[in-house]
Image (cartoon, rainbow, N blue to C red; front, side, top):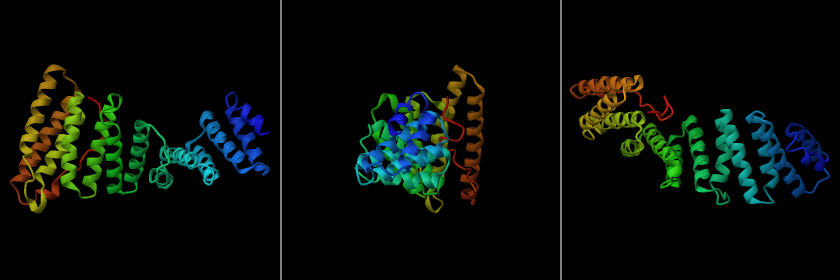
Length: 281
């Protein structure tokens, strides 16, 4: 029966899931054979295009089957489970699954792939309000792809995401540095919209320093941005750029008003993270 299920993996993956599961349920296989079939079930579920929850459950069973047999296989299956839970929006389950392999030495993934795993882990941590841990994971994801030409956009996005998470957990000085760094990276990529959002976020943090004191030259940050936006619009007009210019002018007016008033800190608008509104030009 196990051989029949394996033969169906490519041609009929959905049927292979049923056959392999039935073979496992007989209870006559050795532990390693069972673990191998559990991994095949994971592959069959993935190939059949079933819901991510089904894949997560299959991968969890495979990870448990490999636990005492192969640390590398166990870690890999926990990653498969965690990423599937993440796609399903089950962020508590995603974090529980991904914490296991990412806290140990057993994942033999290429840096680019490991970075993606850490970024998804960070996104789920964000959803649970665990911003400090999310910031660390985003930072580590960004570090893993430094210098990778194929991952330049992801690198910028993850530096930005780390800054957002740091601001959410009160690490405002670190967040400011992150926003400015991300703005520079987006500028190198020629992406004015995410650069604008990072610079506006940085300007707000420069304005609203500790004890009501200014942390940095927020007016210069906004002035640079206004010049850049006007130059872009002059070259390639577009409604998305016009909207960014309008938003920047409105926020600049708010900043000017708040900088001259006693209650500026209560009126600062929420910071737009990299996944709110996208990171297009």
